[in-house]
Image (tube, rainbow, N blue to C red; front, side, top):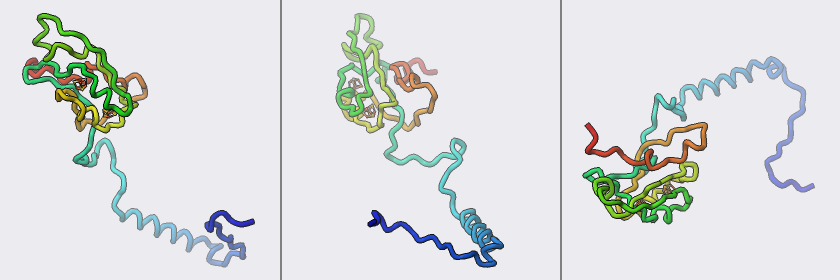
Length: 167
Ligand code: SF4
Ligand code: SF4
């Protein structure tokens, strides 16, 4: 039968020589390979104690931004959700009421805003699509977890603290 690849090798079944039966040359050869690897530069790092430098284009967890007066920038226009190739963003818009001008920048705001980080591919399209500078991807690595629900980031998790309330 014709072989599919040329990778098959003929196994040498001739009787072992004295040195082969002693195993010593093979052991020494194996030790030589191990020693060679000990002297080589490690390909791994001891994370989390040791961290690799970020790539200049690294994109991590998202934040929802506020303006200088602490008002939420997001107007729930939905452009980020529309641009998202992973359909990871959902939101609910609400109308600003009288007396809430100090909370929200525009007449409309996101009453609910969620990003499903299990869907997100950290492409940054949401950041690029946003006309209000409201969403940014930071250099923070998303923490791991055993619970799928913890990867649904809500508005409270994403919104940066109010600079006016910072000490
Ligand atoms: S980074 Fe990309 S995949 Fe993640 S939420 Fe934004 S647009 Fe969607
Ligand atoms: S984050 Fe930006 S693009 Fe997304 S809904 Fe808010 S204002 Fe619109």
